[in-house]
Length: 480
Image (cartoon, rainbow, N blue to C red):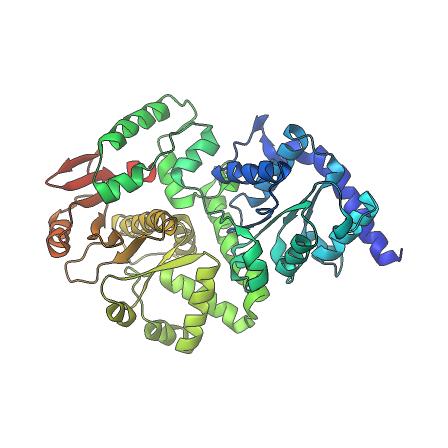
């Protein structure tokens, strides 16, 4: 073996020996084991199927923004394999492609081939035992998807999980895409935040869909009472937890940081790494264009209204509209931002500007706090931030069902959002803090012949319904 591969061999052996001994450091804090995210049970189901002879869903890809807990999820999977499924340590290989970059010019396929040769005296085609590959920060290997395809095609004995930044969503290898199962790891909802941070067991149901599309508040009212009782009886839950989550939350790595300035800096660092580490790996952005990306995000974060035309952004950045569109498209594919279109016919949606929102209100707040925000009053700013937060909840809900849609209302006396099921009339949703008038919602209900409308604000202490308008506290809405 030449010295180059001897170095790689030493790295593989070290990981196999070290990872089992480091598991407790990765999945425990102050003696308490981290509660796994919902996605863990989904992955566990695929693993169990694989061990029972199902050869299909064994190429999992977990894209997600930095710091949402992807690496912790991998270590929890490792722990499950080792301690519950009794898989031998040398049948589980964890490694990070970011580490490989520091070690030398290695790639995933080289690591796997050498690992199989030295640990099992086998090649992919001759494997006769189950092998698990847990590959972190996969975006650092530009050919990660092709490597996964080759491994998938040559053996049915390997179960693979690739995690990495949301840049993995830009994969364009059609052959690999047909074989992989993508599970997006999104920032934590407030419900998930409470489960993971306080180890609360919360009821999982379709309350949100029933509220929006059926106008049914009976089950939600009972749930609202139950969860508020649980929070009251949770000794380490603090009164300002929701507000802190609203401005600095969504990322498990921030749970145990109490300094808000440090939380803000960590969130800003996530954005910087997407711009300066991830984007160059996927779109060959020049240094000048990386600056344009940051300026564009700053521009979006400081807008009172996010329906911004390409032409307006182009003039602000002094770059072409084509370049603006390219930047926005790429940022959407990384899941840092998303857009919604104007309600109406296809031609109307094409003519109207899109509204852009950040993946979490905390990321928007981090940029605004970094840049300074002297032109907007606190209450007005918090309404804008709350609108982004509600938009992200609705966006994640709608993305789970191909028969549901979300728009913004471009009429003069408009509501913030219109959501609908296929062939049904839209449901108007208005967001605010402080006194909230029902006039806009009533106008929208009449215009679109909606069965009911929704107002999300802090003007009510509990959910209730009057004249087919549902009034719901923003905190309650975040819990369902």
